[in-house]
Each structure stands twice: as C-alpha cells, then as structure tokens.
Length: 288
Image 1 (tube, one colour):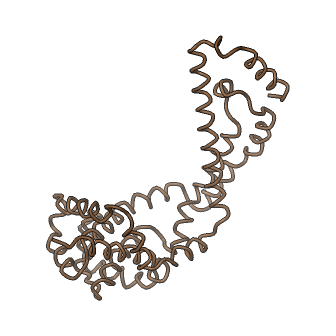
Image 2: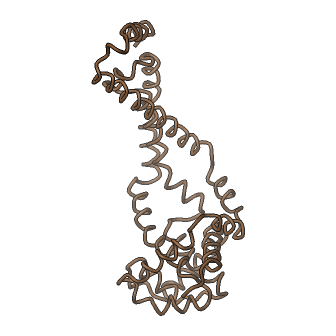
C-alpha cells in the first residue's frame, strides 16, 4: 500500500468521531491493535535470536560457559528462593516412583558418600531426555541437507522485505486480513537459523550428542564428590534413566574410558553445575 493510500485510510478513520464508532467496531479496532503489537514484539524477538546465532560462534559460547566456577554457580543457585526445598521434594517423588525402586540401594550408597539425591535426579532426568533431543536434531537431516534447507528458506526473504516496503504500514484492522510480509520474513529467518541449532549446541559442547554429555554429568558428579568413579552404581542409575537394562557396569566403564577425559576438557560446566547444585542442596537441607 502506498503512503497516499495509507494517509487516506487514516484520514477517513480520524474523520469519524470516536463517539460515533459502534462498540463492536471499537472492540475490533482494539483487538487488531493488540494483535499488531504482539506481531511487532515477536518479529523483534525472532530477529534478535537469529542475529545472535549468526554473530556468535560455538567456540565463543564454550569459552563463556566454561568460565563459570563451581563456587560462582553455587552462590547464584543459593540466591534462588526455595530452590533447594523444591528440588528436594521433586527428587523424593522421582526416586519413589515404581521404576526407580530397583536403584534404592545404589542411591543410598551414593548418599552416604556425599552425593545428594537432588543432583542425582537432575542428572538422571537429563540422561532420560537427551536421546529424544538427539533424535529430534538428527531428523532434521545431515549437515549438507540442513544447509540446503536453510538456504531455501532464506531465498524469498529479500522479496518479502521489498513487499513490506511497498505495502507500508497499513492500519491494524486492515493488516489483520492480509499476510504480513515483514512477519513472514522474520519467521523464515528464524526457521532457517533453527536448522543449525542442534549442530551449534554440539559444537559448543565439543560433543557428538547430548546423551554423552548427560552421562558424563552424572559420572563426573559422582567422581568429583566421592573421589571414585563407582562404575557399578553409576551404570545402574544410567540404565534406569534410559530404561535400557542392557547398559551394565562393563559397558559403562568402556564408555567412560573412551570419553570421560575428552568431555572433561570440553564441558567442565556440566560438572560445575551439578557439583554446585549438590553443594547447595547439602547446605540447605540435610539428607534424611
């Protein structure tokens, strides 16, 4: 829409006194204005997210995350009201569920050595959801396929920007009835960016998949807290979290020998976070 057409619509509306506008039309104007404000907010957020991933490298993210110390994270967590109490209640329910009863002795053994059930339950939940996230990322296709899709999504963006300039900024009530080129362009840019998020996360963590990161988290929590790897106890927790009862002590030890040192170098933030959580839980509420 041209500027002249825009001005004509605005003048036409302003020529009608507010008192002469029917209530139902006034309500439609209000809803349309609110919807337009929400669209503008979303477009701003979409653009910011896409710009962030375009401007920041995985190595930048890795360096930023790994600057956080255990003490610093623990201090931050201790400032969150009711965090420890809420986690304690949740972890009690988590381990009382029927499918966790088989590891009760292992949980108790680890607790006697200083590993809190709050931090164990968080680590086990991360292990449980990691395969789902890894599968979701994998379903987006190979790196080559993702790059092709990303370029395809970006192809019409410039044309949409040009259309947006041509249409100008029509009144909200009219704009609700037609596609918004600016919003579509922002959505396509965000979708294009999202195709690379999985690989971005893996590269930032220096990992092949999230499952190995979450398994390392539990193993490193136990090792940092007790000074021992305790492969038998850790493998039982992992097999329950994954619902994979073929995952035994031998399989876990082989995995740890192959991957632990590499992950220790790349994702110390995972260890720092779980150990900090363990420390905060221990200070605020003793294990029963």
